[in-house]
Length: 288
Image (cartoon, rainbow, N blue to C red):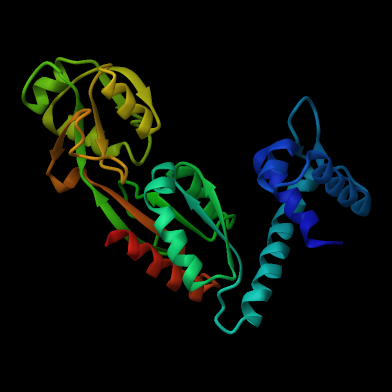
């Protein structure tokens, strides 16, 4: 039984679709389906419920998945053991969308020089979702926005950057932040997310009560809406946001209480310390 069969099973279970798993693995859907069929034949049991267009793990598959993940992880760790530097094999990294374009490109270029044999598997997602997957052992490390509470001691936190809260507007009514927020349509960055907590806290502390006209969970679309004159918004200064842009007005809220902290989070019992060290070094290059 080949290790890649289990990799395909895990991928299908995570993405809920053979077609999506195939795209993720750069395979055809038929190839992924054949791998799953071979596993089902080997264990003589159905592993996926293939109703409609989805592929949902059966109860038997759910029981098998933790072992499958352990087998795959152990297999790739073998390469790191045999490699003197320990910088080989696969390493899974969860990353929030703004870090994908603003932090990761420089990090990957640096990492490619320091650890050319290391295969970095990148998974995008929200801070909350990625942290859950890290907790469950599905990811080796994550780059997320820290929550408004302290993480448990079993996690190691390396702060990469602190992003001040910024009021975005364009030809809006009002002069002070309060006037701008109270007299223009408010575009709200998801208040339920960890990353949106800074804006929620600011509005509460300032006693500004406004109803959002729009609510989005992505920062780039919010910027575009403000540029188009659709409203104003409070957002963290993510890496690609240019404060000196002529397209919009940016007012930085200088109070440190409302900053968003971006950090790499790992478990304190990581089995890949060499990879963590070189990853930390590569992330430092984004701060220069």
